[in-house]
Length: 313
Image 1: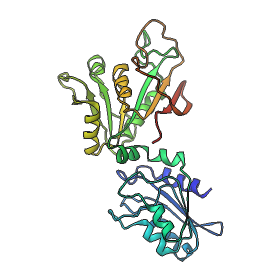
Image 2: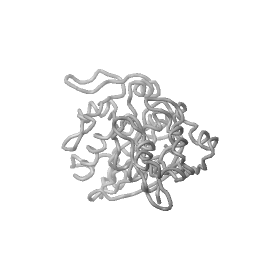
Image 3: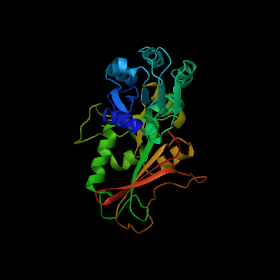
Image 4: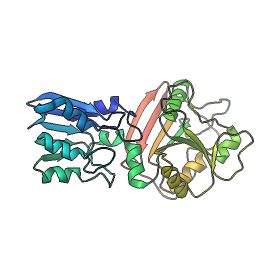
């Protein structure tokens, strides 16, 4: 129950500490919440915020944290030291820290006599999925977005858009929440997309807008051209601080990313229409099947949004 509360705190503060992960923490003593907090914009970790709120009531209490408490000196002192000084008796951890520089908090707490339980919560993983991939794989978290008809076509004759208004607004919200948006040169030449987030809040500003493939870009294009091998380009983007990439290209680019095992999540808007004909489908032919996990479906206006992961974040 208290881990769920910590997850809600982190969810309410999503993006506050960017580019650091957002963490929630709750201190419980004798069944009562005596302190809680989330990562602050100034970098203060959630555990420290929660301990400060709890004060002396933290001694002998339990702390629930969505992410493994850090055990190293970074921009702040180790959270494990603060927990041990406060006299916390038990810590429940949502998920391990994938950052090799900060990991080891569970072992440090156990060595200090604290009882530690690791839940390995899927929700805790998802809350910081982009950051987790960035620090562990050295590349951005890649989500491939597409809109298709019910018979799997990416173009419906006579219609400018496959998906409806609500789905297209959600796409702009997705753009506003990522570091970069990309398409392939085929899409650039065919559609001249802007790839910016429009008519939605953009607290982090506009995403970087990229085109993968051989140039040149059309005159007046504001996209960045990336011509190298996909793994090299993603590594370079990660080094520049890009943690998340929304891929909006056509079937060829999506197939290339999937064949290179560089897609983490799929978002497929399925419209209530049959396109007919023999137009392009969602993906080019893949060399082998790709099993998906954590499949979910929800309605967005009249469209069905299918979300699935290629791997655990």
